[in-house]
Length: 111
Image 1 (tube, rainbow, N blue to C red):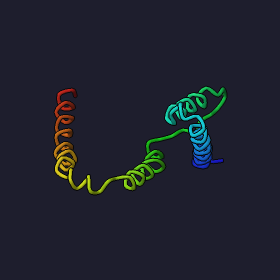
Image 2: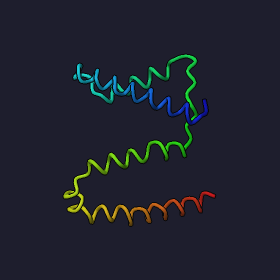
Image 3: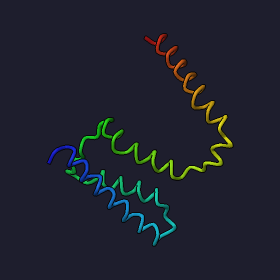
Image 4: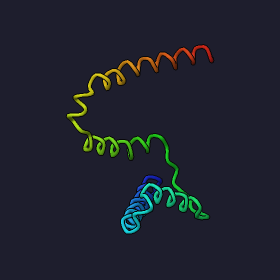
């Protein structure tokens, strides 16, 4: 099994575990779903001898970011976004340039 196949199988198992935990959280509503996910992740990490596949940044960009962006696009309120277009634009454009400038100055003086 290649590394990519191992990673996809691992994602499938994680998805099944997350689905099972979601069903548990519906039957026991006193425990929030994110708490169950965190506990499940800790339990998976404590399994002795479990070799987790290596996850590089390129694999995260390909596997997780598109799904997160797609889910966010489905849940965005377009009317609210249009009402807040100026602050969003300022943060998206001016904020990026200010951040790049600050990092550039700090890097220049640190190196």
